[in-house]
Structure formats: structure tokens, C-alpha cells
Image (cartoon, rainbow over all chains, first blue to last red):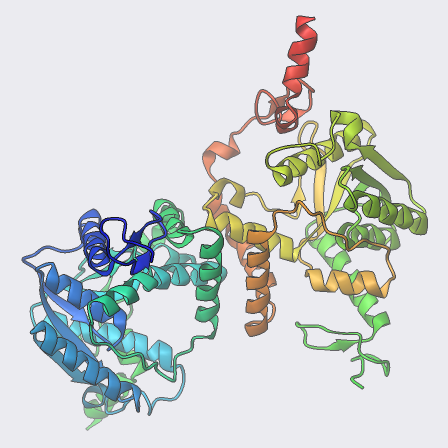
Length: 302
Length: 302
């Protein structure tokens, strides 16, 4: 039996850096300390902020809510029911269980109530539309209900895969923008990724150690092919050079200034002509992809 | 039987972009046209230049020499016998066959004659020392024998793998420097990669179609682990997005200015205090890794 570095109990996890074994209890302590260190390092959150945690039903958002609640932050949960058969039912069940266990308010929005359609009903790029929709509705809800900050469960694996994908496509503009903390701007709330530096594997281990309820049902529309390749690649690299994901992210944070262009620094946001929320263009992405300007034209012509 | 796009003969290769089948003869024509286009596009070579082609015994350098000879360029071959058991014998045999078939002069240098040691004898990072040594000896030979330019067989797969590796390690300085043509500078000859834009698969197909002699024996010291991962990754990506290697390289060429720093632009080379060749520092990498300054001290102290 391999023992914990700090006690006589059985090893629950082997860390990569430092290379030590930890029992379940010491791992939970280690994980929560690690998250707290990230929060301090990037000045992510304060205890007096009203925090809205975005929960999809999966382990990452759920672990984020769980650890924040344990660390004494003031959180509430936000979930969007996308109306995807199988996936949405099981997601809903998981977030409801989580809210009950954590004893925190859960806010649920039904996509169909807002747009008249579920994600099943849309044609075209479902993933891209879903991303735009979730970011928009989460921000709008948080803004209208007096929250200070939105927390999402994006982890180290998500970040390095996003960054690599943008490098492969030379999306220079996006490359300046991966940050653990996106400051508030007009009607955009502050957005925080508390797991920015934390590997997916560890989050899963934490969720299991703490018996956090979450669903493992995957959305059947997920366009995972290319993202999966990036993730597999990083996992292969980790075997040869443990901690390369973190080092790649740290190198990115140190060097990402090279991707900044003047144009972007002088960029000014405006208000969407349809919904009035902060927007990069005349009409925000949400109103554009859901063609809400058509409804407006319809009502104007009545 | 799948037929060639241009004649009734059997398909020898299926190109990815454009997606067409070619017979052996039309593929050879296509390949040589493609190389000639690269040469013109980047202003790589002129017919009146004296060209030294570096040949290791493998397919890439051999195909480079072959195609340049067929296109009417004035080439000679340069080979370093590294003294690696098995590998070096089979490499030597291949380059001698190539020189005979092409009817061009072959210059061979024995590493042991220059440094007193073979690559077998060195401790430490063999791959890194081998790279420094080959670049140095090739340049010195070309410089001392009146050549205008050195051609190497580096291909698209090499380039994208180098670039990705430097990105993963955030070696910003190296990232400004991947070029198909490195201009001459003091005693550095011009260096050209004629296969900069050409995928390894196609070079192999060309070498086979033309019955070019080459060895498939690999150096047993090659530190391939991490480079192999990059190559596998790109090959996996190609399956999902054909031509992504080329597009990644093209994007790099368009955007690489962001990696340039002022410091590098004002950098001044000097002459190595030991050997007198152009060098970045007081002592060049070659004299440093082979500890030739020690010999100098020894002779000074006699």
C-alpha cells in the first residue's frame, strides 16, 4: 500500500509537481489551498462580493461552487436549461442536487422561454450559438440581479487547448484575451475562472473525494473532434514532461503581451440597439444569432 | 482502379489540396513544379549560384539534391561522417550511390578528423551537439570552398514541429527566425530550405517514384520522443482538417513579426576568438561544445 506523504493513510492521488502521494483528506486540503492561492494570486474574488456560479451539471462548475462555498464565499448558482434531450434532464437533476447539498439559491432559465426555441431546434453551428447564448444570458441575469461577478469552471486543460487552437489558427486577437479575471466593463460583469491553473484530473479527483453530485452525460451535439485532439496531445506531452500544461500556460501569461495590438486597446464598446446590453457592434452577438432584430422589425412595422 | 486526373494511368498518389489523383509521371511533374514555385516565391536560388546540398543519407536531402539537379541548378553534395555505428555506414553508402547516379561531386568530412572524436564518443546532449556541429562544418566547408548557398532538406513537417515546439516552450527569440531563406551574413553563407512548404509524405512519394537511393536507418541516439508527439499530433489534425500543416505555416509567415524584438534586430555578430568564423558570442557554439578553447590554452601554455 502506497502511503500518504503526511500520514499513514492510503494514497488517493499522486501529484505531479511536487511528486507526492496524498490520502483523500490531505488531497482535499491541498486542492482547496491551491484554489485559494490562485484566487489570491490573481486577485480573483472577495468575500463581500455577490458571486454567481455558472453550473451546467458537469464536474467543473459544480466543483467550483463547492470549493467556493467551503472557502466561505457568498455564492448562488445559475443554470440554463438548453432543452437538449437526455442531456438537459440529467444536468437539471445534478444542479438541483448540488443546490440542495450546498444549501444555496439556484436560478434556472429555460432557453425556450427566452428565444422560443431549444438548442435542438436550431440549425447551423449549435456549439458556437450555445456559447454565445450562455455567456449572454448568464451576464444579463447577473447584471439585472445585482451580482458582482460570474464564476465559471474553465480549467487548465480548457485554457491550454483554447490557446493552442487559437495559435494553430493564428487568431492573434483572441490570443491576447485569455485571462483568469476579465474585469467588469459597462454592463459586462467581472468574470473569473477559479480553476484557470488547475488540471481537469485534479478537479475530477476532488469532485469524487467530496461526493459532489454531477452528471457525466455529454451533450451529443458537442463538436469535440479538434478540441479532443488538442487535449489528447497535451495529455501525451504530460507523460513525457510532467507539468507541461501549467508551464505552457505560465509562459503564455508571461508572453501574451506580444499578441496585443493597438487597435484592440483603443476599442470602444457600445450598447446593442436591440437589447441595450454592452456590445462590440451595433447589434450584440446574442441578438444577431437569435435574429432578434427580425422580431423588432416585425413589431416596428405593426 | 482509380485513375489519374490527367491521363488513363493508375493513381500513384492522392493529393489533399486540390483533392486529385495523379499517376507516377504526373505526380513527378507536379512535385517538381511545386518545388520550382517555392524557389521562385521566396527567391531562394539562382541558376548561376554554386550550391552545396547537405545530404545525411535520408530521403529529404537526397530528394532536394535530385530535384535541384533535374531543374538545372549547379549543385555539389556535402556529407559528414559522424562515426555512428550502423547508421553512418549505411548513410555513407547511400550518399555515394546518390552522387554516382546524379554525377555530381561529393565532399565527405569525417567528424573524427576534425574533433578527434565520433558522435559515439561524446557524453551529454548528442542531438544538440550534432546539430551545432553539422551546421558549423557545413557552413565552414561551403565558405572556404567558394559556395554561394547551402541547401538542406528540411520539410513542412520539420518546420511546423519546430515552430510548435518553440511555442510550447515560449522560445520567442527562435520564433522570429524560421525562414525558407536565411540571407548570407559575414562568413555565414545563405541557407535555403527548398522543401519549406512541402509535406514529408510527398517527398517520400517523390523519392520512391524517382528511385532515389536513400537510407531508412535511423540514428539510434535521436531524441525523438517529444518531436514525435508533435508530428503525430499534426498528422492527426491533418485527418480532420486537410492542409492544416501548410495553413499553420502560412499563418506563421504572415504573423511572425509579432515575435521580433528590437534587441535581436540590433544584434551584431563577431568573429569567434578560436576559429575566426562568424559567431554570436566571443567563442562560437562549435568551439564551445567541442571545448576547442582548451586545446588553444594547452598550445598557449606549451
